[in-house]
Image (cartoon, rainbow, N blue to C red; front, side):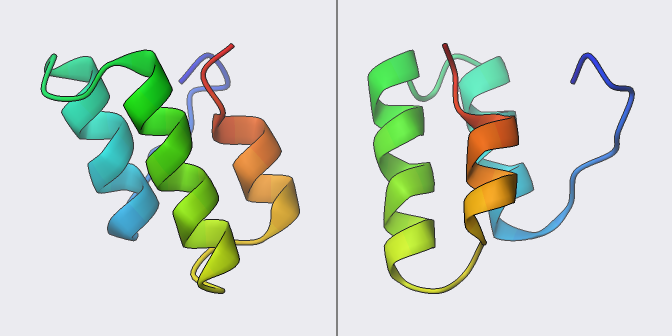
Length: 52
């Protein structure tokens, strides 16, 4: 992350999968939005993590 933050938990695993090439940008964003819908992350975190 550009802010130098260490991410852990389920959102961190999604980002890790993206960085390792397991997920593409669209799938990463979709998974993060699913986490928001499921109440696993909040809107602020989603916006910080979305791949633009």
